Image (cartoon, rainbow over all chains, first blue to last red):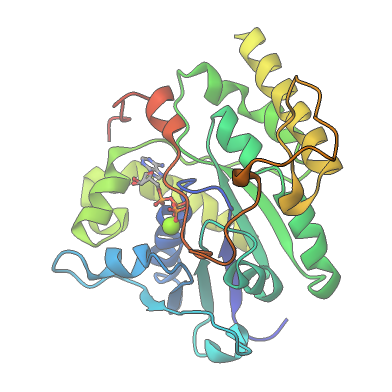
Length: 211
Length: 75
Ligand SMILES: Nc1ncnc2c1ncn2[C@@H]1O[C@H](COP(=O)(O)OP(=O)(O)OP(=O)(O)O)[C@@H](O)[C@H]1O
Ligand SMILES: [Mg+2]
């Protein structure tokens, strides 16, 4: 496979953690080779994140409004070995469809809550449809905002089995540091000892994706 | 514990059945009341306003706050 590795962080459900995960994947991948986070969300959260604070965000962040015209993400961002797509919370949008058509890997953050799980249930079907034109697509569920002592978090594994998509071994825990990172316009990688545990799980996630 | 596990998994199974039988935007809320005949006039809210604010995102889910009221994992 030539060209960049394109990772789409996608879920039509709002607030699942797409931007948080996309920004941290971008930051972690940027330590390996140059990486760009493409902000496909009209809300522009990733762009705002990168603009917050005084430090420069470790990955390049570009806002892209997907209009009616044809867009070739793989070509447009071929200068970057790693391209992370932060998708808007609507799978019917052109941006989300484009992301699924263009990516090698789709990472689907899901929260341990019934409503979030129900609202994410259309994704397997969307993935299947995207695979018709994009047979290389690998898709994984990523449990996000997991709490070790929460019964719902513990119940995730079985509920996720219903999706029929592989679940990443790495789960992202609910950590205040992810919010701090957004506030400061950086990633956990820039937050020293405070960011260590978050960095460890993001590294685990990246290793799984790159494997 | 086990019961939450079962409840969550079965709620997802149930939601899945609904999602599969009514794909895309056409998904209907499964109401316990029988539906009125097709002749009956539909409530105005049943039809989405054309095109308006199509790209606007959902709000962050309220469930997050309900389930984890201000509890943040220590860093
Ligand atoms: N692992 C986590 N620990 C703590 N807070 C988190 C975590 N993941 C996400 N959040 C918080 O949850 C909220 C939603 O996260 P985020 O904006 O990343 O989701 P999103 O899927 O991009 O939302 P949208 O659908 O609006 O684009 C934010 O306040 C974010 O800081
Ligand atoms: Mg977002």
